[in-house]
Image 1 (cartoon, rainbow, N blue to C red):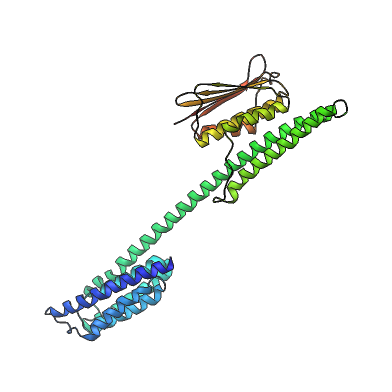
Image 2: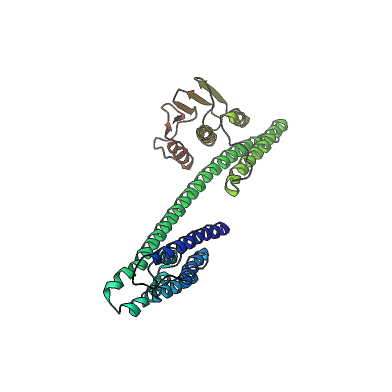
Length: 364
């Protein structure tokens, strides 16, 4: 990037040097009261232009060289010409790339040196001071404005990046909650079954322990995938869970003693990644709640594929929840996930016993 900047500045310096030679020579051909253009005038114009090749590398050095060359040119009585363009660019560069206070002091000093020729040729008068000041004030104002706009844009981008980072952290935290909550609930249920059957039916207790091993391994694998999203954006990732893994989820729940019946209506089809993951998480969190609050009560998972909407319903036939239902962190996170995709979630006890979660997610 630095090399590219030097190349661009060198090209600008070369162009201004070419313009300086031709323009200065042309200005000397017009009849005027100024000193005739000679090799010294051409040399000063070239020095001022070529010094711009390092203008962004050493802004103050560049402004010093350009100011001395321009002031000497004017003090010797040569006609106004393209050398002032080099001075304008040097002032703009200082205002654009240096802190405001340093840039203002340097530009003010350059202005005083530049106006020396007025004292030599016309005395201290305001008539020459005003147009001479414009060659500093205008590029300084433009450079400062460009710098402030750039700083504001950088701050806006940084704020947006922080916002995206915070949203990503919240999303990953929700993923970790879903993975760990479901895995631990299933493991807890299977461990209780194993302890209950350890002495009377050891073969069934062994099956529960096998299920614990399998559930914990799958939960750890899924947790690693989720955390990998934070550690490295470019690292190869395993696919996130979705409807393709719904049968495995149902199988794991069945191993805990929760009978799950899956019903699909409409034409089953591939869903967008975000919606596919959200549907899976809704089913996972709902079945985890069944395991926590309804024990081994049977549950029904209904997926409905409509042209523009996919619906997810999870209902259990467990004991009736208290009349005063309070939404926990799991359901709150589920609601946030679905509403972020433009969908809606309703959840609550069912008259006569049980609990029902219904989510609707738009496909457009």
